[in-house]
Image (cartoon, rainbow over all chains, first blue to last red; front, side, top):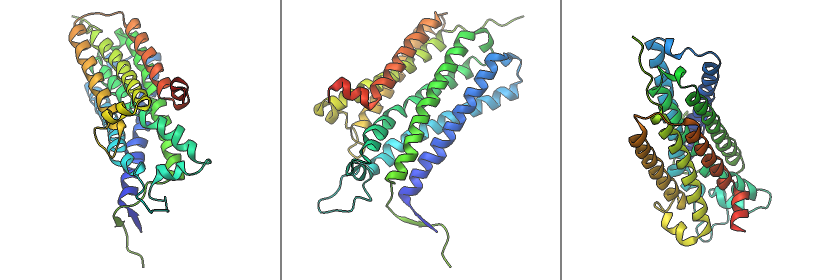
Length: 188
Length: 109
């Protein structure tokens, strides 16, 4: 049972950081919608506030983990130049996608949009988390702030969703692969 | 004794800065696609290409806008609707500018 170092890094980027961030964004948005309908934040106990704070901080860290690992680690493997004389494009996902009219769009629309729009999500969710932590006890008095933060959390979810969906399809069409082979379990 | 709510200026600064950061990222991305010279200048890390400069500079703009706004508004009560609307417009423009078909239309590719 083996996988390559690049497959593992891509899984950490997309499934661990990206997937959990997407779920956490949805959770934060659901909580914001609920608190907008039934305000009670200032009545919550200190333990609940501590939990909310930890949840928001972990969510933000996951978001930054996703874009930083994607941009600085996985993306260079995706866009690697093909050395002269190499005909097999399997290890060069961007070149592989661009080599066929049937897959070109996955790079030209999918990756070109994803690589930029993905960054919106952690920027927006950092703001959301900061506002919710800073105004935790008085958020009921700042209903317009809460409504605004809710709208931006929705936008962050959209940005993360675009990046996540395109990322999943791109990795199916032209997987990032290669590097050291890691053996998880020896075959019998 | 009831506590005074914290002034909303800090929240307004954070909200507006988020829109500014997203818009800055989109403008830098379009600039990098429009000109090879700009793309070259935005290449801070060769394996990542211009995306390295686009994202790094956008983070600098975002954090600078946030710090400046926070410093100016932290103890004030701001018309949050205006800050939110301005940020929302910048964010929508950011989504549009990064959407490749729109960018191609803009750059007449």
